[in-house]
Image 1 (cartoon, helix red, strand yellow):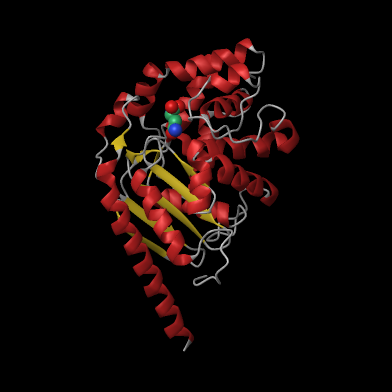
Image 2: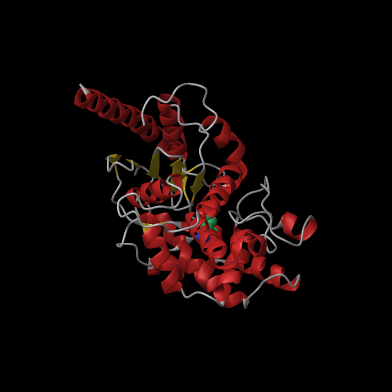
Length: 321
Ligand code: GLN
C-alpha cells in the first residue's frame, strides 16, 4: 500500500517535471544568449535542462542537465555564505545592505546617488563588495572547495576561457569596484577583488549541481546524503531571504509572485531554487530574458510551482513531500 503510494507520487512528480520541461523548452527561442562576455556567446540558445533533487535521494531530470556552463551570479550565494560564515551577520551587513535594488544586475546608479553601500549581495556591486571582504581572508581554492560542497559536485572547476574573457572585458565591474574604492568602502585592493569575483563567476556547474545547491539551501545547510552540516541554519535562512527578495534582480518581485521560492540566476543560463524542506531544483537554459534571467528556466519553474504548489505562500495542501 505504502509502496504503491510512493510509486504514484514518484510518477506524478516525474509527469509534473516533464510538463514543466516541455513548457520551458518551448520558450528558448524567445530568449537571447548573453553576449557582453564574448565567451558566453558560444552557448547554444536551444539548450535546456531541469533537474529536481529530494533529500530521500530521488533525482529526476530532463534535457541538458549534465552540460557544464559558468555559474556566473549564482556564485553570489556562495560568497555571501562564505562572508556570513567568516564574519557573522552584523559585520557582513555593515558592509552591504539587504534591500532589493529594482535596477538591473550591473547597475551603478543607486551606488553613486542613493547610497554608499551596495543595495544587496545578489547584484554585482553588492557581490563585489562581499568578495572584497573575503579577498584578504580566503583563497580561491577555499571558495572553490566550498562551492563543490554546497553543490555536492566535486567536478566543478574553473572555466578558464570564460574567466579570461570576462577579465578582459569586465570594465563595468571594474568601474563598480573603483567607485566603491573611491567611497572608501571597498575592503581590499580592487584588482585582487575583481580577480576573485571573475573566478567565482567562471566556475563550471551543471543543472544537476544547481539542484544540489538548492537542496542544501532547502535543507537548512545540511547535506542530506552525508549528514554533514555546511553552515549555521540561521545563515541559510538569511541567504534564502535575500535570494527571495533579490536573487532574480529586477525580476525578483514577479518571480516571487509567480514561482514563490528563493532562487538565484546567472547570465550563463543557470537558476538554482531551494523549496524549503522539500527539494532543490536546478535549471540550465542560456537563452535569457531582458533582465538576464533564463527565459525557459522561469517558464518551467512557474509551471512546476503551479503543479506542485511550491510557493512558500501557497494555500493548497502539499501534494508531494
Ligand atoms: N559575471 C557576470 C557579471 O559580472 C555575472 C552577472 C550575472 O550573472 N547576472 O556581469
